[in-house]
Length: 277
Image (cartoon, rainbow, N blue to C red):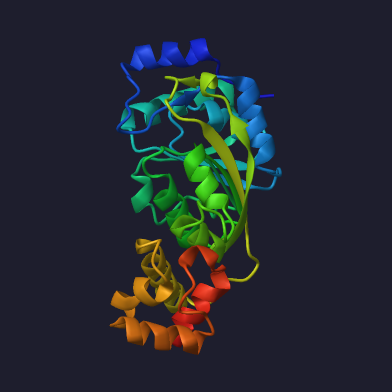
């Protein structure tokens, strides 16, 4: 077994590096080894998985992943912490297959190996765009687990008809089936955040819902539908279609009620509208 980091280890490492966790970067380090193993177990990893981890920080989750997966690739923008995590892995997980990419996660387009899983404690302010960027950029991803703010988790896993169903829910549904996978106590983070955190597990579809061109059009429809949640699709898609009357014609062609609202539509409904454009 890999020797995981505890709270005292993380604080000592942070002090040595002069690292002060900042809200701007959404830095909240997980300090409890039992929670790390819970997160890893919830990710349903196998010994054959190549896991990409985003924002490993000081490496607490990285070590837990190395205990199970064949290869872990960590993406860390902070050069100081990147150097520290390499040292931590070399000492506590010697011989395990580990790669480090020191880059902004939103700009990553290549990795040392094709990832099959994504597991990450994502910064609250960029969690949705980073998740969608990686799923879109790396077709080899088959499944994954993200630890995010509970409010974001609810939106990602929401189903049509829910009050929190929106753009993130529909866009993730293009790629995968997503479900809530448990909550994580505030007390296991350092510093303790002012929000609750939850896990979301996703499993990619075997086949994409359509071509890249259709995805772009579908996402434009999703953005339009949820830009004004209280309005009917006839009104919400008026800018996209050219006018309310043209939006109504588009919706009728797609077999979707012009009086419906975005939160009532499943992903295939958005696709029908995009195809009718």
